[in-house]
Figure 1: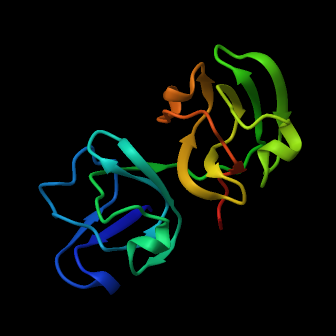
Figure 2: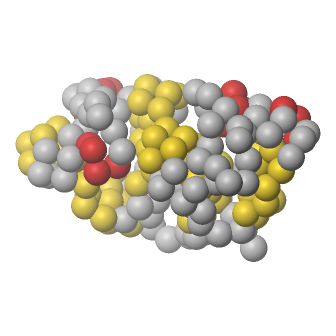
Length: 175
């Protein structure tokens, strides 16, 4: 069973709020979030309410301060749990919007998009199987974007304003 606990203080101190399902607005439960404990499930936490703003992928474990989840600040305003997935992974990326231009299909992690794709920008994507995470910079660093199966005709469809993607990986248990 999935559960995530948000703490107002660093190192799991102060007021806390436990959540075991999607929450579109956490503001009524806590003001700031300086540590998180995930005791079950896989989660995406969002900087803003209604699943907007910076995205943070959180797996089971302890995050004593926001730097541990690659946070840009101590603001978490919504969260979603995503189900465990054990199937195949398949995704196509494109260097133009509307799934056009140069296309490449991936079934594995990619620590450096430019080295394999020869383009720095991903303008659209078709996730056929599995859950994926795009990262702004190579080697899984920078802003994170969670992609579930579906068509993403523009980078804004996955919450990004800049099509630069430096790396991506499959969202798997244990990562």
